[in-house]
Length: 216
Image (tube, rainbow, N blue to C red; front, side, top):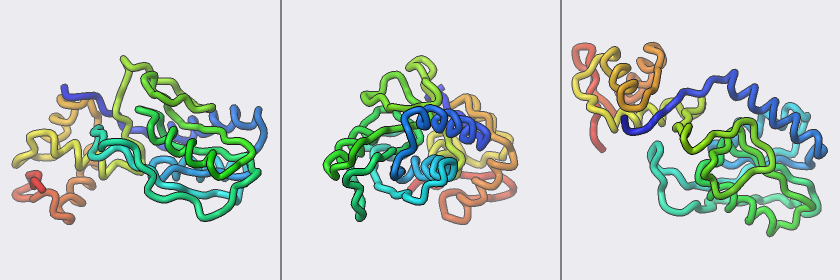
């Protein structure tokens, strides 16, 4: 097995955001929420809905390249074009794994002179160099898993498919290979949709009901 991967459900997302909301409310409602693009955008939107927050903004950091592959140092791709000076701010991402993206975002936002900065992620990995103020679930290093969020299914499964021997393979065979290589349980219907998208985008070929991954 290369590493473990797990599909996250929308029920998981809702439960984790509700947990963050409970913890956040104990410290008071922020004046603005900033989601880290791309992973933090959806949880940031959910949290903003829970507290009826209109001041929802985004910045973009990049760290991970292909699925489960770190792409150099975390980098700030774009920042804010609004003032948050004197405001209580909540920064939201999906997960703190290495912690570099959140640390980069936190340090950047502090330079914009907010009154306070709190950070939150749905999942927090034990080896992360940055510990968010709020998180819903702690994951030990031993439990480390590549979590595939609902908004990352196509990208992650496409990238995982590049890591297995996907040559003239049926959907059933690919399901089995993903389970063997990543302990990943994928619904046949979901995988079928991803594979067809790969075909449409030139990432795979389909012949006689079998798929072959096309190397870039």
